Image 1: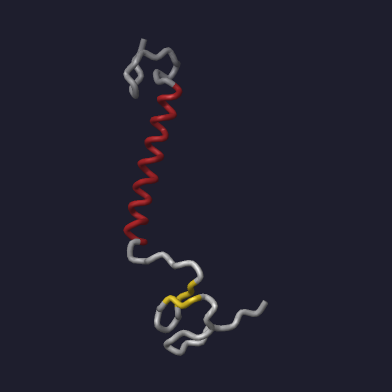
Image 2 (image 1 turned 90 degrees about the horizontal axis):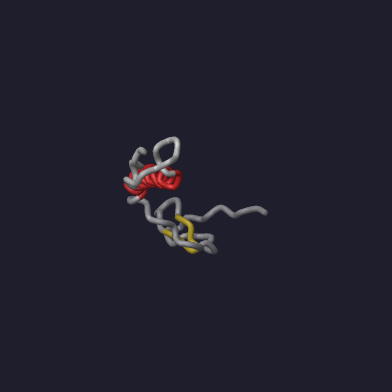
Length: 83
């Protein structure tokens, strides 16, 4: 009988690997790919700070202004929304 390449125990399945071990092995591959993508994305996003809730950025000075304000301290007037 062949041994399972994941757990090392004897397996009686056709593929030579237990179904639960095959699932675990596939999950490991997916997790590794997801982690690599998050690390790559994290390097790109690290320079951008998350926007605080209820604020909007001023186009002119890039300062975060409370969402209800219509004019920034630098004098920029936000366009009024219709609707």
